[in-house]
Image (cartoon, rainbow, N blue to C red; front, side):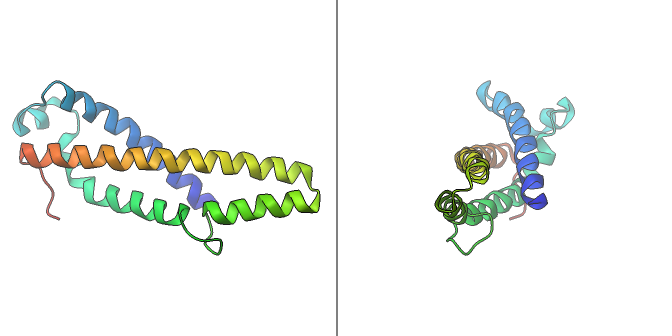
Amino acid sequence: MLTFKKAAVSFLALGSLLVGAGAAVADGGTPSGQAARSGDGAQTLCKRVPKIEKRIERALERINGDADERGSLARLEQRVAAAEDAGHTEVHTFLKNRLTARTTLKTTLGQRQKDVAAVKTWCQAQGNGSDD
């Protein structure tokens, strides 16, 4: 569970980075030389895009996994049902809330995937594309 928490925190941090990159895209961006001097971290973000993409893909694969995969929605749904069948009200409530949070995370990761794709396109247009 500790790894899942670290991943969630990483994705939130990525979101804050992408908000800044989104503003640059919205106003037309700046040439790569100016972006490097502006201090917005565009070059660094462009270099990290492949790793970010892989991390998001890995997390989505896990969440979308079957009931045998730790961290998957299917497994958590199975645990929620088992707690309800056993009459463990408090455990059921706890797991149901976790299921809600994980479902929200899945939606958030999907949005992050789209955001990173937009950043990747921007980076390539600016000549800051990474060496895939």
